[in-house]
Each structure stands twice: as structure tokens, then as C-alpha cells.
Image 1 (cartoon, rainbow, N blue to C red):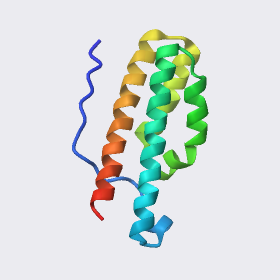
Image 2: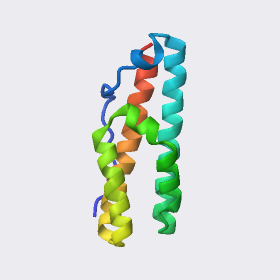
Image 3: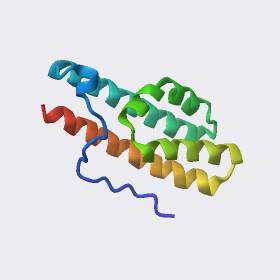
Length: 121
């Protein structure tokens, strides 16, 4: 199975930052940095769960960063998170590998997208 990750150019995020920041650019930057930290933490937990075969670290971080993921409103990421959990619960190695690879790529892409948002200020 080819698990190579191909990242794309930054894409616009599905979020209206002004509704959270009242157009305060410094606050927007801080919010974006928090979102990047949360997505990176989720990515690390995903990798740890894949290495250990234990979903608990990933589930804990998912719960912690739910608000951030919901705020970003990335349906692909939300769907893949659920598919990863389902694959682990079903103990299906092929699906675990497939969905963790896809989620890993989606999270890395999301970091690129958020960082591009910071650079646009």
C-alpha cells in the first residue's frame, strides 16, 4: 500500500475569523497559532496511537481539541477522525493504516492552510 503523503498548496479555510476576533488581526494570529498547536497535537496523538495500537491517546486529544476542529469546520477531517476510531474499534489493520494515513495527510494540510492564513495578515 502506498502511504506517501502529497500536500497541496494552501487552501482557504471554511471559517469566518471575524466572527471570533472582531477583525482584531493580532487576536486572529493568536487564534490561528492555537489552532495550529491543536492540530499538531492531534497529529502526534494519531501517530502515537498507530505505533502503540492503543486509541486512548488519540481519543483524549480528540476530546480536548473538539472545539478547534469544529471551529475550522473541515468535514473531511471530522469524517476521517470518526473513520479512524471505527477502524481501531473494529481492529481492522488495513482500514487503520488507510484512514490514519489519510487523516495524517489531512491534518498536515490543515496546518499548512492555517499557517497560510497567518501569513496573509
